[in-house]
Image (tube, rainbow, N blue to C red; front, side, top):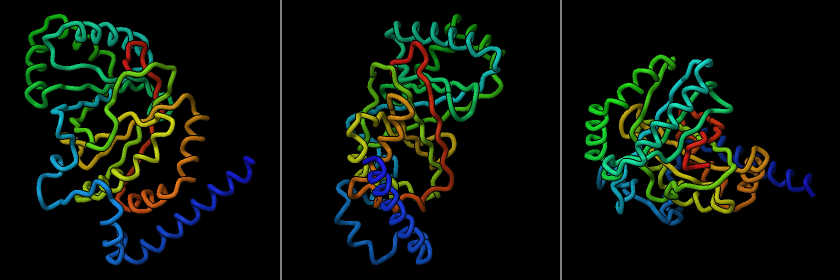
Length: 278
């Protein structure tokens, strides 16, 4: 049974690779003759000429802004860093004056080692971010934390993000789970095409409640997409991803989005003790 299932997946993947090869030979992106067919198949198609990409792709009913932080920690300080982050984030959550909340905090398990990843949500967009930063810069306890934290870090960087309109809202969930952060660096000018494809394809990845959130950058490195997934374990991840190939239409999404990617990366992450996403 398992062998037959694996063979079926292999055949679908081979069929997909043959289609990608043909596409690349013909043009490198979507062939002109496919445009009418594509227009009819995308349920959430947007027109790149009507508005800024961020307005077309992000959720209209909310004004949430997200920040993702990547902290590369000195190995000997990892435990102390996690404990200190836990204490500070709890304090911020208890204070209703701060228009921000931690969506999730993780340590990278596979990928870049000794790394912490934090996802923040600012309810109210850029004004909320500005207000939060202003209050933090006058918070004596937070300034002391930031000074102490600087001794523990090798490097850090962040990005400001919007969430795709067709993705799940990232809500707290119980564990235990592992999380995969898949990061795609797209070719400039291809974000609308990416969004149109994934607006249809996301339905193929909902069966096991694995879809957590989908985001694209506004500030930081541009044309970057982050997809966040949750699985019970690595075996569950493999089975869930393999099952997607058995669904008619998933291979079409991969076929049309693969040429849009310059670079991609996968991180497997373990939630920190205080993370709302467990």
